[in-house]
Image 1 (cartoon, rainbow, N blue to C red):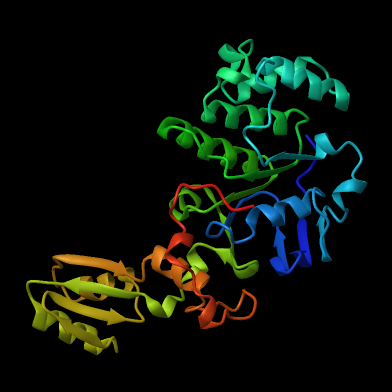
Image 2: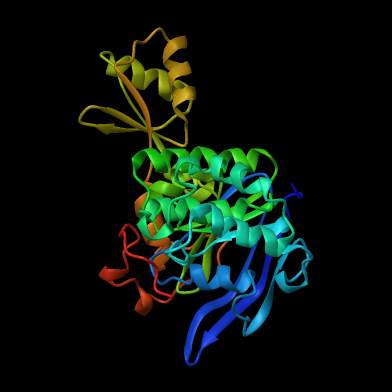
Length: 327
C-alpha cells in the first residue's frame, strides 16, 4: 500500500459555458480519516471530484494529490483509487475479467484479482457476467477496481448508492478500516445520515462553494446547546444551580440551563443531594443546521462567502433525496 496523501484544492473554479459548477473551492483532506463530502444534488460534488482526478480541467485554481496533479502521478492505480460510476462496465464480461483487464494494464499481479474480489464480498460472483449484477453489486465491483492497486487514496462518489441495509453497514465499516490503515478516504454523498454514520471530517458544498469544513461535532456552535434537567425537588435544584452561577429558564417540566453541559449540571445536583428525573443535552438538529448552511441562512467561518438570499435552495434540491447528482 502507498501512503495516504494530502488532497488540496486551491481556488478551484470550473465553468461550463455561462454556468459556474465549482466556485473558488478551497479545502484540505487529511489521510487517516474518512472525510465526507456533503451537498445537495447539483451542488458540484461530482465536478469537484472529476477535477481532482484530471477528468475535467479546472477553469482556474488547482487540485493536487500529495502535491501533484493527477496526470503527473506515476503508477496512478497504485496511488489513487476512484469510484465515480457504478455502471461503466461491459455487461458481457465477468467481474474477474474486468479486474484482470485493469491489472494487466497497470502491471499489477493477477493474484490481486481474487484478493480484491474477496475484500468486497464478490468471490462467489467472480465468474458471473456484470450485465446480471444489481446496482449494489456494481458498486462493490467499482470499489474492487479502486482497490486493485492497493492505493493510499480512495475517492468515492456516493459509494452506498444501491446497497441494501446490510451492504451499507458493511461499506461504513470497510471505509473506516481503510482510514485506520492510514489511507486518505474521501466519499461524497447527498445524505446527511450516511455521512453521520461514516465520516470523521466533513466538507459541505452548496452552489459550487465550500460552506463548511471541519468535524460533525464542530458543525454547531457550543453556545447553541443547552442542558434540560428536571427533578422532583425543583425548588432545591433551582437553588443549587443558582449557587453555582448557572442561570436557569423555567419549563413546564424542569429547567433549561444554558452554557453548562449535562455533566456539570448533574455534578451540582449530586453535591446537593438532589435526585434528578431527567438530564439531557439539546441543540439544533444536524439536518436543520445543514439546510441552513446550504441555503445561506447560516454562515460558518470555515466556509466561503455567504450565499445571497436569492439563491436559496429550491424544494427539488433537498439533500435527502435518493436521486443521482446532476452532472
